[in-house]
Length: 236
Image 1 (spheres, helix red, strand yellow):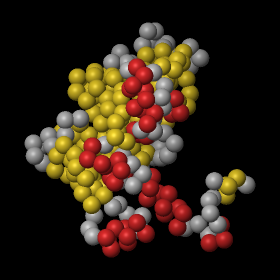
Image 2 (image 1 turned 120 degrees about the vertical axis):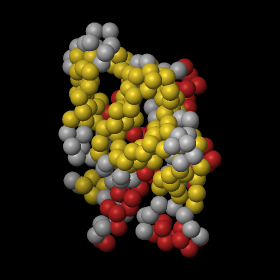
Image 3 (image 1 turned 120 degrees about the horizontal axis):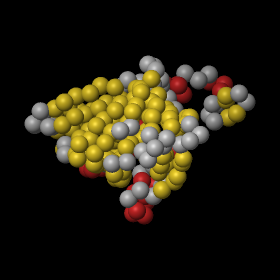
């Protein structure tokens, strides 16, 4: 059985300790270190169609498979918390950019959020679907709030803050206020759409959204800065 250690506080990372013959798979861009004895292979898990689904929704066409023995360390690009979600034959949906890695007993596919959430929610809510048996590790920006909803219980989550929820849960999208409210919300980089999630099941929520983080940074740039951001002589 694969052993794990979640380390750090403000910017957590996770180490997986693999025995001979044990494998995990994940997003290659999140691998920050590994033992020389750990081998890496790139595979199209689930076949061509599943790989195309992942590519369309912003994930990688090929997944990175890592085989033991040895240690592998994963981290995200921004500060936040690492969340371990165990699956016991059930499924979860995860905001696709938040996925770090999963055990080999888990199947990975991707799909556009139902009811147009991916289109209406600004940048889009693209969801990776995980089913099977094993652990899935995801990264929550900033911090994470978790909720366990009873049958028929509901919660509304600002679209860009939605991290993950159990696959069997019902979701729909609601718009914030009228046209004037939406215009003011866009100016202030506030959420315009909420995803309503109905129980029973589990819901995980980012405490920070990329859209709002970028918006606040841009608004505080010096007026003379012009378009883009100059860091170390490089314009981005």
